[in-house]
Length: 447
Image (cartoon, rainbow, N blue to C red; front, side, top):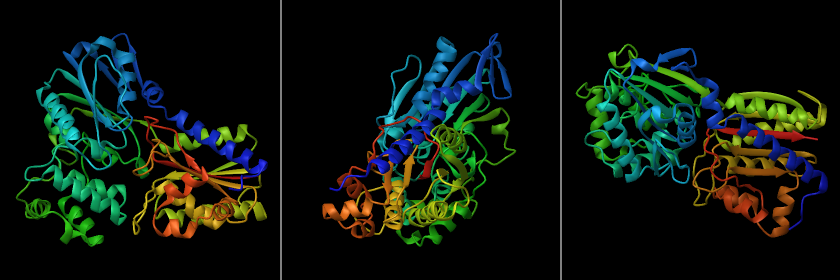
């Protein structure tokens, strides 16, 4: 293998440092404690204040990849004031806690452990009374982890629907629209169980636009989607005929009004529900930009709402980086171009990878032969698709190194096999579970 040049290595190292700064800015413990304070036995969450003397118990529930770290923050703040709690997290994302129990489960395809955790959470919520305070910790991944199938729908059915949606290129808004209508916990379902308790949600956003009813499928906020929206998603991707019959039956009954839809704004169950957004993608990008400036780069944040096919986003990002190098627009080198969001991949091959690795591989193709440009695509949760990598890092020499190793990048791209491509070139970003999740970070460095 032909190694990167010394100059390329320097830029690559800077890219990794900038990515690490983004992760640090959305650390779940720090994020929760920035927004949650305890003063004179009054719990302040954002602008909301809760006098603890008004409550007999504090319960902690929730689901998501950041759940264990968020729960640790609450334990640090509230200690033995927490009476009980359970949070479901992705396997490998747990932490040892004193007051809050952790249930690890499968993600993105749900499993029986997720059902066990969800049922215990719904039982805790249902047992909560008017003088109980329920703190709900919500972060990315919660939709797959908080598994409480609606009546008539089995775990196997939900697993099959999840696989179909992941393979067809549906975005997270569309996927969660369907999840909410196949669940007793999502789409405001947890609020139904907890009413009339006070429910306060602390939310780490992993969705475009920070839409609260989409993050983890909004278990404790009003739902804006309907059974009609659910049917339209299946039809858009031409997979309605492949959906399990039990799911079709439920949606058809919902369309006829035979099944009650998810609770909407104004429903009594939300009278004592409050939400606070504690971490977002733009916070990560701003911290990344500050680090880039510290390293000597001019910085430009394009957007925190990037979506679309990973390969197409790669073309746009590399085109902007090339324009910076060639003409100094929209800013002169040395420059750091930043954006974030969540792309999708339409799977056509039998390979292994994730949206960030696919974006990076497509960027490597577009960058071929261009000096002094590095592109990084990484998931803030530390995992990208069904892999142990957060993403990948490429430069203008990546394709040349691949050819020197005897591998065909176009074949790997065609088979959606970006993981094995970057594994062969030592280009994967392996961070392990970060226990946070605010979508993805994409950056281009131009020296």
